[in-house]
Image (cartoon, rainbow, N blue to C red; front, side, top):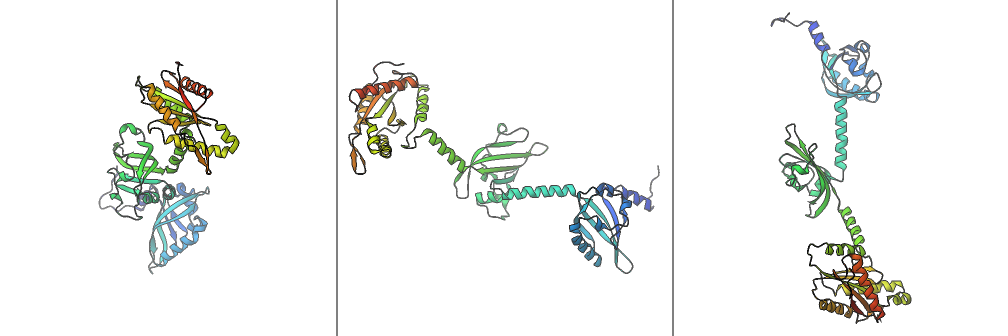
Length: 424
């Protein structure tokens, strides 16, 4: 096998072979900008053979709307005998698609110190350019996003905050000491995350969280936290995206309230009543008992018929407010519908205690309602059933209280009765 001695000078064939086997496009042009040499890699880059390029102007392969600007740069460089460094432009492949090129070239200078051409290297940066463009597009989206987007290193030092995150946290634009902002500022989950909360493949935590904004106000957010791992599975850096869900939470709260509360009187409604009774009946305390008072306003239909439903609604609101102000704080008062109300009373161990409570409730109607400077006398009838004596399920307990209440009405109204028989 032949070997080159230290004092041997490489032959032209050696250099030509070397040039033909590099991955970059090596070329030469004359002062008319015509190709006088090209290695064969150009066929992979532009689809033309090296021979097809010879004698043709380099500008005939450059995207037409870039020709003028590239010509100006090359002409200026020739006049100043200067190199072309990291010059980017677009060339057109034989098949018509665009190829992004980065060129570096040195001038060929004659004896009169004039540039008569260039020798250079073109590198196909199409994939890099597309990746750069894609990254820039993503960055533009991230920068414009209303969501809080941030990254931090493995020590929890913040490395990036988008404008929305800066505004949320009160971090000035352009702050140089960004890494001094601890990531716990934009997620209080960092110290809570454990392996059970993270996807084994992607190391992602997602859920609802609460962050404090620059004014110290706690804001509910929907958040994703990603732990990006290196090959050794150690955390390389963290990223997050968080969306303010204050409006959604407020809307959910309204919807939940509408589902459980009467819109006219703002008392709990029938659905809330059933949930509460179920909770009381499901108590693990087997000795737990409570009274259900079924309250019906006497002759309320006359108010609607004589004064109209507008006054009827006003009367119901006044009645509800009066009763609400008279019951104990831990008792449950609701509007069942129309002029019917239910009161659940816990913690009364004797029948006498329940009767005394009912008398006091009836007494609040001794004073007439005032509407438009007119007084309207109101009374009520109350039927009482006690769990579990008068029913061990909701329907039986309600039916017994309803039944004894109507029995009270037949006896003259404006009073109360307790169920006498076991309806269970």
